[in-house]
Length: 158
Image 1 (cartoon, one colour):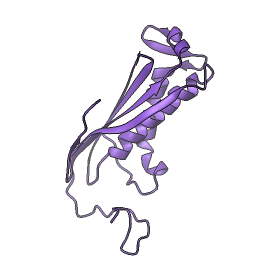
Image 2 (cartoon, helix red, strand yellow):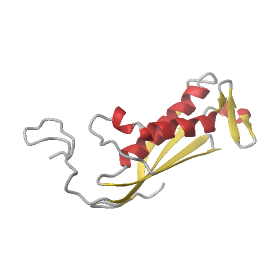
Image 3 (cartoon, rainbow, N blue to C red):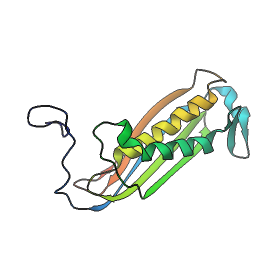
Image 4 (tube, rainbow, N blue to C red):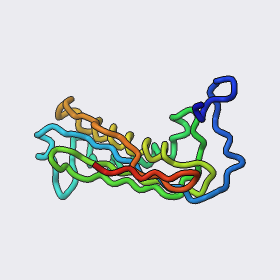
């Protein structure tokens, strides 16, 4: 049975009241493929568009998304985020890599927060660069690591 369904198969928030408060972390990655001409917009390790510094703006947008995850994903618990780190690197071979790490002392994990932060940062890169081309592709969003709670996840990074 899915965790977000009650005994009558209706959507329901998971009851975490009986779980222990532990330190929980998650790390997610999104990759964005940029068109060839984008490399010309890099100055001093930052991509600049007509809208401003792309990577810095993406980091801010991703951080805001982490804090708003429970407003965006209906059955997510609101969490007092204690750690949020987003990095944007590249492009390497035309791809930008966004990593989002989130941590909290809580009764539930922060996978959705990390995935949301990485995703919104990628959407921000797209938005700020779409005047170059609509051939930008958000290729992959995935959970790389989760710690704390019942089980840990450590995905291989291809």
